[in-house]
Image (cartoon, rainbow, N blue to C red; front, side, top):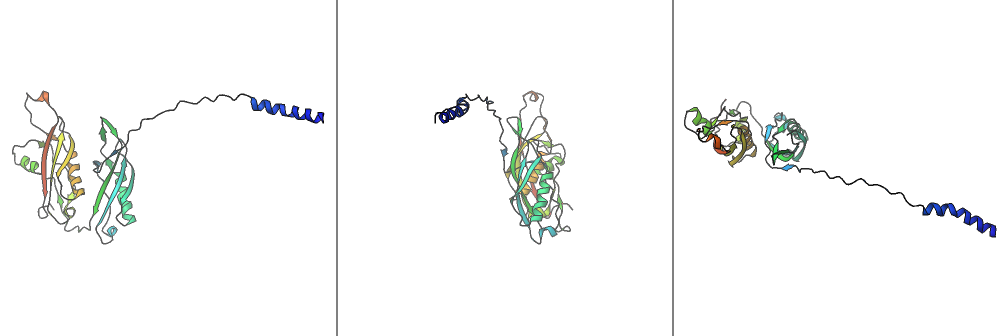
Length: 246
């Protein structure tokens, strides 16, 4: 019996020693923090290259269609993700819009002087068009008309802004858009604001894009050149169904 007890004690010694051995210290790396600037949220994306969906009358399946696409663009303006927020009702047509948005490019948004990513929405109104009736409009604004007639104006467009707009996009009504914008001392347009919209978001966006891509000149006296600061200007444009250019 004593032998059995001694053997049990001897067998338990290594286990007790292992159990009571001090645990090694684990060195933990200090926590690292990364500052991530949140994406700028907007309802009005400004485009360097506006989406140009390539669709046909057959793609609309006999009806006018509308959709809203959610867009995520990085700090450089490249579209990283496009998803359907409101569908046209046709999966194939939605895919045409998504491909067009992915190929487009957004104007970088500056926040405290630094370009940041953006999240915004782009609306599309797709209409059954008749190529024989549709006609194109040019950027024939109030200031541009006065400029061509050599009248005195607060500023001048260095060239006529480009405009991609046809009569089908007026939805059967005459339209008017009033807008204002800011420009730096080099004549670069920095910000465009719609003061009175046409009632059609996509049409207003066409005007914003045209003005943003333009450049102006302002006559200044020698005594005021040195104290230049950003200036605000305004203009307006009308679109009449019976006055577009073939």
